[in-house]
Image 1: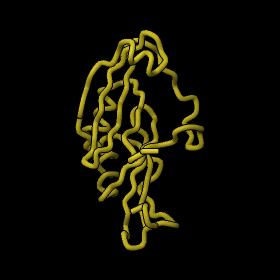
Image 2: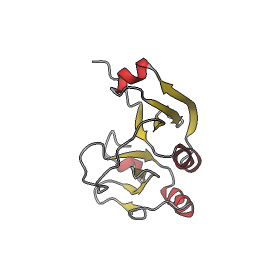
Image 3: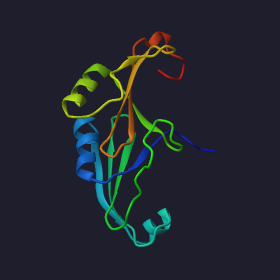
Image 4: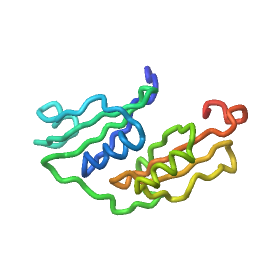
Length: 154
């Protein structure tokens, strides 16, 4: 096996402009590409005939990125249950050097959080969750004591 590392999270969105406002303006992702994906390759890849989508790949300095996908000509399905315990991909998480500032800035921009940043009882971190414009859970984690964090989680 030749897995080298994590590349991206793909997120299907309803409104690309709202999602770009959240990920690019509020969370400082930089747009890498913004294009229309369509044709036989795309249809075969996702298993949906005649699919056409706007795809925006927006990244962070560590070379990880989010891939935002807005279907332009086919319906998408709403999540019927938004609780933390739904089955499947649960959330995406970002490292943060100043979680209190991030939290305050996002709240000022109308983002709702489950709680403000909380100190973990088992790791030296502060963390919190919010939802992006489509309801995807987004977590932020700030390591507060690098010397005492579990190896591999720093």
